[in-house]
Image (cartoon, rainbow, N blue to C red):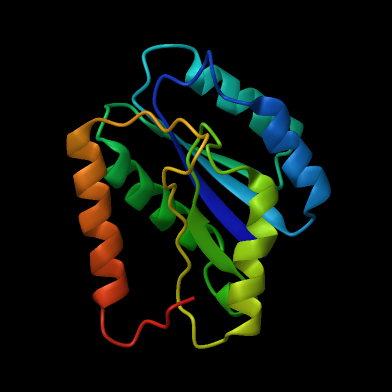
Length: 161
């Protein structure tokens, strides 16, 4: 079982609902914990509709006040852990961005690493600028992202996968 936390803030106009539904159809062990991070649009209503379509595989956590992406992910991870308490030997919990900048179809590649290398505790993906691709980021965000990625590689004991 894989549970992905999806932090959402004002995503009503851009949340790719069909992509989430298709991922559930394609990957029978996949579950979502959708986190509404104090959205002021119709995001919560949309998440609840998704949950009604798949109540056994989609959870919704509503944070009334916007707390930021990191805290929304943390709260979602805690809610997902509580939901699967005592059952984690059979699965993984992670998070994915709501805009699906990395398509959910990539999840099997992440899982392949986790399954083939039991010593791996976590897998991370990041976007890099490639020839012909346009990744729109501020300079500040670019450097913060590079610092995080470098730190992740330097942590002792992490394999370079």
